[in-house]
Length: 292
Image (tube, rainbow, N blue to C red):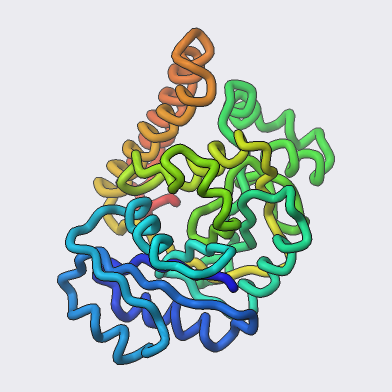
């Protein structure tokens, strides 16, 4: 059986839409463990009235994404876990298809699938860990266009990958994050790392699981819709990017230490972020549009 862990925080309608889509499309044996992170929008017992078969776990305070998932996992019964964002919608049996592939491949640690926005545009689900060479190739990307698409996509992933073939990767978007429960016993503290309140956890967890000798994997054969609208405020978006940048640098320090490599990477990465944010500000000032 697979346990599907969903975190709710003041998103009753969106979370209900997610649960409904699971019930409509999933054929494998599953349970839904819904963790309410101290929502104030409505009484979380409304979820039980609407979906009597779910397990409802009520946190006394908003502990964040990582701690909320650990709370849900502690109440789960499945041998496999799926961390599923509340703002996702299943349009096909993505859970059963991904679970079947995981069960056939013991070498896989975390497995994810394709994602699209509601307008059917592609989300970048499978990624490489950042490095100095990755950043440089991203800057001088004309070099990449000299390489055949499939080689270029496998080398870089992220925005260079159209999610059109199965591939190993370094990390996966945590909106659909499937792994075997027994992996937790091999991690520090035998649970998912909670050092980040929100954002960057998927990156960190994938690195830690990869360190155990597992391969992380992207399955192109199925997909879900991930609403992930982002902030409509430039100020909030830039603040979010600043948080993600700090977490990215912390993960890099874990991976590479705090020596010369980290210093050079930090200079390069922070410079790129400043330029990118400046472009966002200019575009917003001129057109009123927010770049993703």
